[in-house]
Amino acid sequence: MLKYDFSFAFKETLESGLSFDEIFDIGKALSANFEKVFQPLPGFLRILDDDEILEEVGALKSWLQRFENFVVIGIGGSALGNQALHSSLKPINWNSLSNEKRGGKARIFLLDNVDPDLIASVLGELDLAHTVFNVISKSGTTAESMANYLVVRGLLEKLDLPVKEHFIFTTDKDNGVLRQIADNEGVRSLTIPDDVGGRFSVLTPVGLLSAVAEGIDIEQIYEGARFGKERYLRDDLKSNPAAVCALIHYAYLKKGHNISVMMPYSNRLYTLADWYRQLWAESLGKKFDLSGRIVHTGQTPVKSLGAIDQHSQVQLYNEGPKDKVVTLVKVEDFVNQLTIPFIHSDIEALSYLNGIGVGELLNAELRATSIALVANGVPNMTIIFPQIDEVHVGEFIISYEIQTAIMGFLLKVNPYDQPGVELGKKLTYALMGRKGYEEIRDRYEEKTSWRFEL
Ligand SMILES: O=P(O)(O)OC[C@H]1O[C@H](O)[C@H](O)[C@@H](O)[C@@H]1O
Image (cartoon, rainbow, N blue to C red; front, side, top):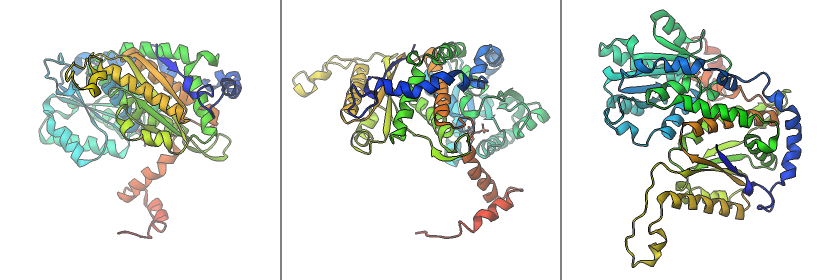
């Protein structure tokens, strides 16, 4: 079970902080309407009600074992969750282990960006005859993912490899180009449920297939998520840490704290912060509220890594604008216990390090940062992973999905759409000369014709 330390978010420890009663006053309306937030049950919670997805994905295990490499082609919600599961649940050097050491499980790679150098470096490393490509796209049309799919397909064709055997698509059941190709050519495919939006989809086939391919226990992830579903849907807010987190963020946002920093003290958990950024940014960053009023609301998510960013961003957090809420993420028991050896016994300045665990040092740094933040008047809280494993990662994911829904309710916005990304997508199509986008290109041409270039 994840543990939460909220002590440094309240006025008991923070001069201009919130009182506990204050946030529960804000929470009263939430408490009274709590059920409504989750009615109808959002898809990301509904999918936990049965084993359908686990079984569907699990059934592909033996087919996946044919491949040494598994490449995710996707972007945003169709990649960030995969990356987060991979980094948090596999050893950092997984991809450099030999096939034997990996017990025949796949190495995982990601083609998200359309950066030719990235693509060349990933594909250059792989023996394509032993590689499967999982093209993931809820819409089945996203430019970056389609481009990467085409590049890979071109390469497979050039090598005369049986294209169909090297792809599996994860996409909408009816719509989009991927579905069309899957249907026409009989490419293997998995379905993303209609009621689960991209950034909430890591516990669907989107995130689970690559996890299974590399031997992550997806049933344990579900166990943690299901536990989280019970825990974080309690309408008694005092026993619901996801609700408390949302209330704290909401209350501080009202006071001008419009940045939410997530700072894991663990390299393995760092990409969870990337996943969180999309969830928080796209779900809550909105121009209109539910009644159509212009509100321009949201809270900018920032990722940070402890202890690295103590030597980089923390100066700003402590002394810069008072516009942040910081969430530190701590690991109690690291998988690897590493003790610092006694060396230089004659140098007093190093004696405090003698014989202590490296993890102990990291956690002391976390504690020091949280105290320094509170001393500087910066509200912060700590989420504690007793250890990093499937159960806790599953619980973490669901806690933040629920927290985002709660925050959407508090801000009175729709957390499930992202109208603000559409224009950029359409303009990309227009700039690339895609048919049907001439009007949009003309509309913005005049506006963008002014130049100041050096
Ligand atoms: O899964 P896809 O349809 O390819 O979408 C990938 C991503 O594209 C968009 O730009 C959306 O803003 C994201 O929410 C989405 O996760």
